[in-house]
Image (cartoon, rainbow, N blue to C red; front, top):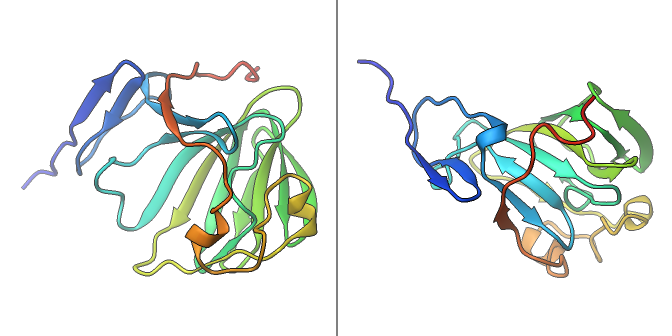
Length: 182
């Protein structure tokens, strides 16, 4: 029996995938979600109502100073490929500059966050394993706090960690490729 093709929906902000199945999705046509206050924007590449069961994938767009999340670790590995622009990786309390085509392999239990840097937006392909039960840890980090990316107190509860995270993610249409692409 052939694999089922996923369905999609067009909106004024772009197309998004609405069901399980195979699909091809071009970022130039995709719906993005943006938090104007903090966190940048993301292109969710998974169906809205049924996330992939084995791994998560999205493209995150960060403007200078925008962290992609709070400084944290997960009990599964992740991978991050900078597609365009520049950003700062904070990993185990160290700052590392990243630029286009840099790849960060993040083993399980590695504390990290990525912050936009440079003169314009950066885009990062983010991929992570998806366990049945997700275990996250949010430590207090002086280095991440410089960017507003540290939890107020150490916790394993995402709701508690993000209680003070401002803004909401709203649908937007972003230009692709980004202006920082050369």
